[in-house]
Length: 411
Ligand code: HEM
Image 1 (cartoon, rainbow, N blue to C red):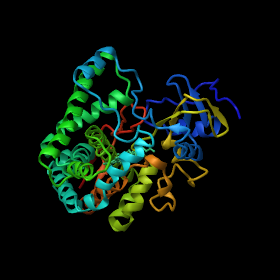
Image 2: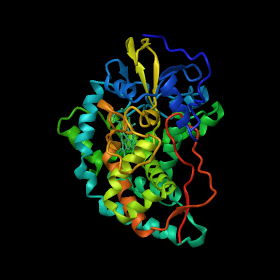
Image 3: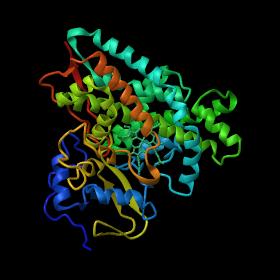
Image 4: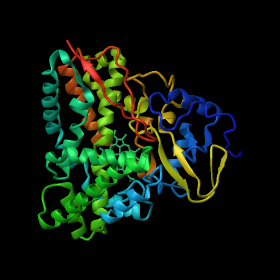
């Protein structure tokens, strides 16, 4: 075993720069696959087997830091949150067994494929309305992110939770605040408006639970309350926390998946045309997008006892950054990993949804929405292409790799 140090540079690795992190990942995989990065204070893990084994070993590598702010919350922002009664932290992803096991069991009983598969025609109708509105812009062209991917998953998750779609702008703003206050690099001053948003966001989650007690409806919140009333062990605060998760995880990452799917397919025109000709290939293409360009490129863990990753000693208390964006391009697992290949046989082995006890609860809903969106886009706009000479940029973030826009045009 060796101690991981990083004496000579960081191989171009810039933890918050999401524009094109893949060359630096490759260098790290080859030269320092487990590296301590003292700029962020994390052990950065880049090889597939190592990332997967850390996800699997939750007894040593706990997820308790998964939602911790990367940069400390300033005193002024904390005061806003304390004064506003903000007591949320995580619904599931940063909880650990046995609490995690208990809450996940209840959330899984409510969040069943039966609950969301019936929404497929609704998702399809919404997609077609949005495509129609985009096409109406004619020669001006459109933006897949703003015109389709932004709202589509938000409408779905809000409908599942029984929340009116008029709430979308607010929910989206709250989710952005959560993403930047937790995984971004804000100054103390910049944190304050986002702190106000988190207070409103958490109050809303608590109101949803209170309303489900007072007026039960046909939705996921009422399902969880009904399970509680039937004897499942889950408190109102815990149900509100699961909603706090879903009103964020339930749309942001799917917005990114749909945006990335169209972006990457259009950058590989042959692949886009293959889907136009044969929509049966769409599910495989979605897994390849998740492998090649995952919505979340890195996720955190904390060593709660001394451990070891890839032969490197990891002392108790260490924080770890698992780089799934790199694991998904590991040449020991994926042949020609930098090639985008919708016929790849093992794309599904990507780690874009994590692995183990915290494996993404919404993975099937995310894939269902991406499938419907791609089916309708390839069918209705076969001539779709990226606007020439527009460079697609990605927002700065430690974990979420999100394009700022995907400008498109058509014949
Ligand atoms: C492309 C879309 C999505 C991606 C890339 C994604 C990714 C992830 C990742 C990486 C994790 C952490 C796994 C770990 O720590 O091992 C996770 C957990 C989670 N995701 Fe997703 N997710 C997506 C969509 C969704 C949707 C649509 C929902 C649902 C409503 C959802 C709900 C959750 C929840 C509740 C957890 C926590 C699970 C737990 O800790 O037990 N996600 N997701």
